[in-house]
Image (cartoon, rainbow, N blue to C red):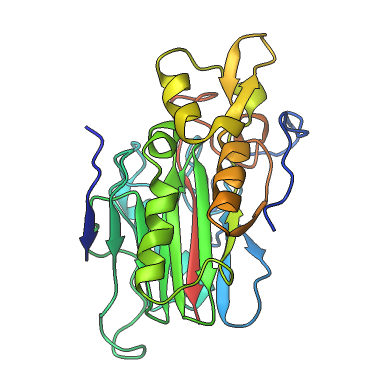
Length: 282
């Protein structure tokens, strides 16, 4: 059941159709080293941000690079992947959340100071679809396999957020709720930067009623047509317009997940893992 509470614990032009092509050249094989593929977003020295891929990690097919505990992957391998990611980011720990396709925003932080403990990949995970923090060294993670991972940062105020924006979350305006929570901690829309990571495009995401109308009521720019000719939504385009309306400069980074062998896609492969979008104050 979607939740809608809040708990404490240059809009760029987007493509209506994605330009990526399905790749079969990337060979997915188990790895014995715990390295995690990470594609950074250049947001200056104060913020670390980016998105993971699936061509690394210790999990074997179909879970290469998986960071989720609920998809059938071996728990020990998921822990190893998460720990390797925390070390690579230089994070004291990574905060994950139990994503429920709602609009709950959880403010996290207030743990031990950096250096008090070794890096941790796991902690108590709040049930939420957006995480916000003002704590340095705490990385926020959003897990996806077609939904839109949205990362936000105001380096001046020292506030960052990671948002899980699937079609239910978009219909519940979860991104706007995350921005409002950031503003309550001192962030200003004019200083905020946002990036939308690898996610499914409108050409690959036909959507029936009433779900489509629920999305378009909040993000009308998401209206699209699938390659099959069916009505669809492009959540990425809708979110870019929604962020622009909130006064937040946003950009799109990464391909359509349904067409990329480097990313998980639940719509393409129902048995699959999850990659992550991550953001952290240095």
